[in-house]
Image (cartoon, rainbow, N blue to C red; front, top):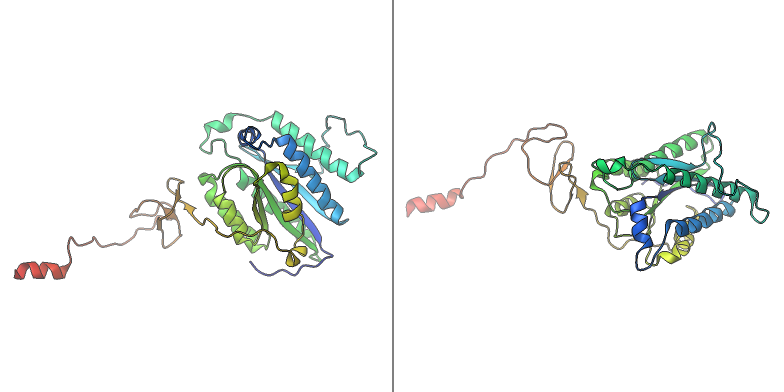
Length: 307
């Protein structure tokens, strides 16, 4: 990733992608060290307020990666009226007004989205996995629109993914497209794995874009992980020793059966990956010229004839 000059006067745009997969959060709530979505959301809102409090011109965007679709929770489009929260957006005298507006909009929009969850996604090939690629695409498009309008180049964006779902091999190709787009735009992609096993694809995303990857060992201390590892901006990271990955799983998913493979076959034209050899690439339709292997070595045939 190309070097980008950063300064302490830059405006930090933090795009947070929250994995709202209800199936994964249900497993997390019933784990040995439980963490429900409500508890996690309260800690995430505290982290968001801390980010906004660091500098007066800091900005935040929150995107929900749900099953079947993704949605921006904050900020709302200009033509969409604000959603009323449970307390009716009543002003809290003990809370900074901007913090309350952000928190109320995130909570109310998330409640509205969860109440309208449709189960038709279970009939699709993607199953019950969250659409992390759709959320990343929305984040990159939003960042591109904001940075294009910033003529002075003072806005420095970064993306933080809060994941609880396992890897989905069906999303490998679009996910890698998002990763390389973020790398080309010099956008760090941070990953906080809250629940479940290590996510190989998100590990690759963090490694390729020079982001931070952290596996939460104690979900009850989620806020501490967020504050210590993901709160520092891109300028402050030059002076901090942040978590790093000792080993990265660079396995890929095959294009034919969407399975994660250790050893596969790669098309020499379009670089598609396949778990089984095929004379024709199913992606670019290239026909491979090959010679059938001889049954035995020519030298051994000569020796056998002499005998």
